[in-house]
Length: 449
Ligand SMILES: O=C(O)C1=C[C@@H](OP(=O)(O)O)[C@@H](O)[C@H](O)C1
Ligand SMILES: C=C(OP(=O)(O)O)C(=O)O
Image (tube, rainbow, N blue to C red):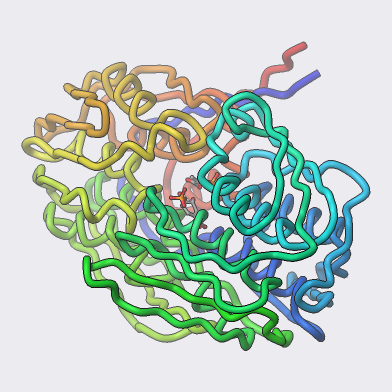
């Protein structure tokens, strides 16, 4: 018997108060992986305890690291040293997580053992050649299902070759997979990215003691080089709150009249805040207060006040800095006055769902005029609340689910989302946190055979 959860969200009065959203998903995955490779103890506070990250924790244990969660909520890790991971006894099941799967494939590719990867139906449909192809050049071998997809076997290499690789897709997951593979590889492994993507791997590798060099390329990109066999040493740090999760309460506060909220300790790494820049250009009253540094990452308290938004053209080159935020930006655009054009979004078709199609269909069902192109979404806002009154198919995609629940908070009539248990992959406690700020999300559970 499977429990399927439908959530309903209806119009509310002002949202108010302050909240701490869960830890950054990208940083949490990397903290577990590097902690598992470091010598000595690492202690990590604020780790995201969402399903995606818990899967990574389970896999790092299966690869030999000692990982425990203490009662105070801190995670203690005893690593195996670079190159010290051991063959897992069973399949590595990455659940719904593209980041977990791709980064870990990189890590094991340069260890001399075999591992098997699988995931849920969504992950099994996502492209993996973007990592298996360059990792093959480093000496690993892969046996994959049709189209280079999971489940797959990685035959790690005992004699890895360093490569210099220019990634055809702007992807922090591809970059990180190769840098992690480069740790157990002699010499220098270089990844060239045409557009800068989130740099948490680079920052955290340096923080753990690795030698990472970043150079600007002549064409405006970056070349990132890691030197093999660093001695990584255990670290203590707190993971900043996730700006991609903060996006949902932040946009809710912009849309629900009379709202003012503060989201504390949110990561504001410049390569993650494209959404906030875009919302400001749309007229959002949104400020970063008490800027400070946490674990080598900039953080701030985010104050958001309800605002009237106007449609804008979002530059395609901004996409990597807000790649997970287009679903919630499309919701903001649906309330704005005028047209918002979002371009350069081909990657959205290969996330947990085809997010371009899911947003276009869901918005249309809520009465919004929207155009879907091969790699663009164009939303024609009317400067007032859309009708709502729809049951949205989320395709087990956490960001689609949360985006439409936010729409329901300010739409004329309530909105429901199916398969809402997907939210736990990145934002456990979403419903309680939103309702604590004044939202009215209710659950309906259904047993399915
Ligand atoms: O490296 C990471 O932690 C992530 C990179 C992004 O994916 P891509 O690298 O596929 O763009 C993003 O969508 C994902 O949620 C997290
Ligand atoms: C795309 C996402 O994650 P992943 O690729 O790790 O599944 C996301 O969280 O929006």
